[in-house]
Image 1 (cartoon, rainbow, N blue to C red):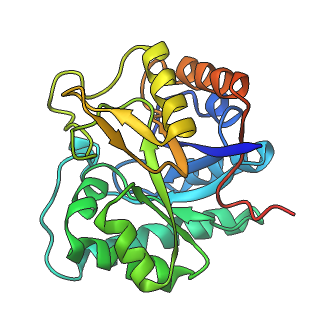
Image 2: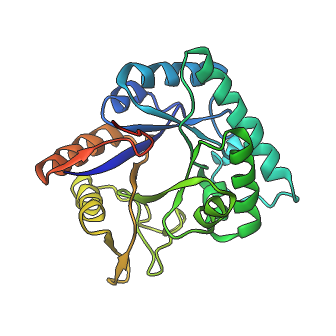
Length: 251
């Protein structure tokens, strides 16, 4: 049977983490940078444990005013320190509950910057490898971040988005553009289903773009996130595609 991972960014204060955790297979938990604190980290990790969901760190720029979505230009070595600090904080919270981290996925501006700029990507990969070389590095399909992870010897997972619009080259349309975030659950689910079945997506100019999808992302901070997750799960199941965490080694 075909399987795919379904991930969501949680611990960000959206208020529906408990509902979403029951619908996904991997959770990217905010590590106190763009959102969250020690208490929210422990709470989200506990929810993940109860639902058998793989736990990942979701480090971002320490810029709560923009929710970590602004791309900040940090000096050499500062991204490495930021990621090291935040991954360590979540690892401590997870360890307290008898769990361990499975993956790391950068957030927002840091994610987008690392997709394009190899120096930033290399600093993230180095921080992740030093935290635990067993961690899986999650990044945009075809990005510099995944190349840096492979170069450092990490396992990587290519991420595709059910609820974001794509540019012709396979990059995400910036959030500042109209239509960058898909607001219709049926449209998002259809895009996610096609990514899972065919590894392709329709870009905003109408072109067909190949996109590898080891994991599908639905954003957890949207008001309709729970409805989107339910719809996508139902459509994937109807197509014979099972949900399974990419970090789960299986039997």
